[in-house]
Image (cartoon, rainbow, N blue to C red; front, side, top):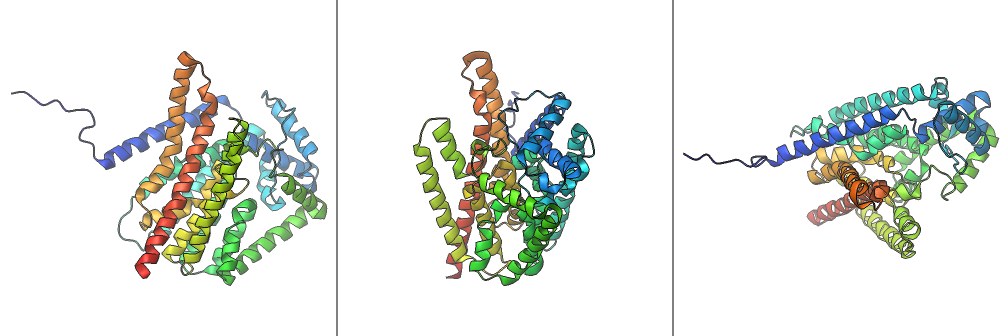
Length: 426
């Protein structure tokens, strides 16, 4: 009797395919992180943080925004560590309020390379612990099972998280702030929710739409909480840096939207500015800026629709609308690097747990950029061996663009959800 030959993976269910893809990306992410460890290099972002921490110890917080001082300390430390960079045209800056620099004052007392890994271990441990805490507390009322391990893995392998760890950036704090902002909102604690929102002063561009939204909707308790925490942060910052230091920070903020600084990297952002910049500068297509303007207008129309139809504070439609507003913020604000998308992770988790958006959305958001990166590595290897076109130079452009597209997909999904909710109540 002839036996039928089974085709490999022919009996795989969608669940098994999903797990196979996640496993492959986990392996790819571990290899990527291991490669970073093997190089022994310290990321530019963290080296700048470490440098301002050292300056705050030696010269005071008022000097951390002096670019010549920062460049001197940064350059000296990089050379001391044995790294070879062309620093002649690089201007690194840390445009954060002084109170947010305090952790790096402590970390700068440790040698740079060890400090970098201490910071990453802290970041990863805090992120993991908070995600467990968040999942336990927002899912307690939903007995309909959601695979928390699946969501946890999906978040940890997402490009914003991996990129944040690789660069030694500070976005875990932003994730916690938006997570607690959301958690207190759905528990009808607007004042406490607003207090956590004040933490986004770490990166003020994230506030350009959400704060006007609360004024429009007259969510006064949220605004009270926001101004309480913001006032405390600003007073502490003035105490640390004085008016001279704060004036230097404001001057830095004024210059920051330009392309003056090395760590702005507009070509690697996930906003409409990236589209215009790359089309104009890399592909000599000035029409790119027209596309960017049209994109910003369409994005703002989506925000208008969400704002117009937003429901009661903390309600399901409110959660989805605020997710849309943050996605729109990432798309239109002048400074929106990939890892800043960590602010929407709590909203994506919450929306997935309560099935407010299709589960495929968070799945694709998590896997598309790393799949794009892996694909670029494969294509780049082929190109390096055979075609010699230099395709690998566009690696991060492709990855960033995939993140930009997925962010717009999230925005579209929120608009679609609100539209369905609006129709159902008519």
